[in-house]
Image (cartoon, rainbow, N blue to C red; front, top):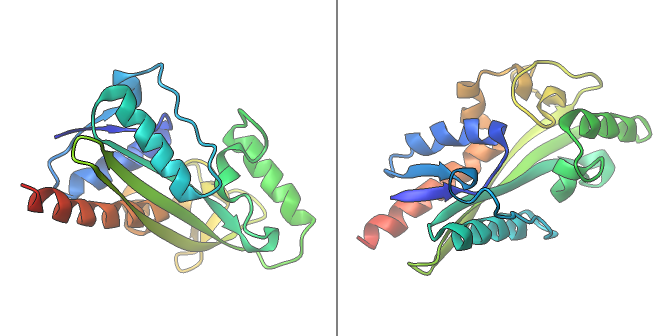
Length: 202
């Protein structure tokens, strides 16, 4: 079954393809840019669930295919859960990873400890032809460093320390990141739910 992945984030795609391939659902993944490069993927909800479903519905409407999407972000306890759903645009519209990371470090310098944080993700699937919509969530606990480490991953990964490993997300090989990340947890849970829904429906 062909399914469109509703993201233009190449780093995210590099993580999702192996995750979904491992799930054994027999999905043929295509990107929104492969099929509908002009389609807009708006993220104007105030929760991860709302944004994930919005992007999946927009991609499904633009392509006529079932769609997968996720919304994820970083929640920092000292900042009251910010940047949260605004993680990708924390430093303003069009901000890149470097600007977002710089703003996060500046905000933490002005805030008291702790530097505890978590990555959170909601993964959504929308199939209008079957009338099927579902979502699952995942999270990963960590701490925010004062200086970036590692050159892998994307987003806040160079600042996000996984305490049990003593390494940042950006220092982990993709295979290891895909065993413990928030996105991995959300998409594995969604794959399990989809397996039951799709195979029981025949």
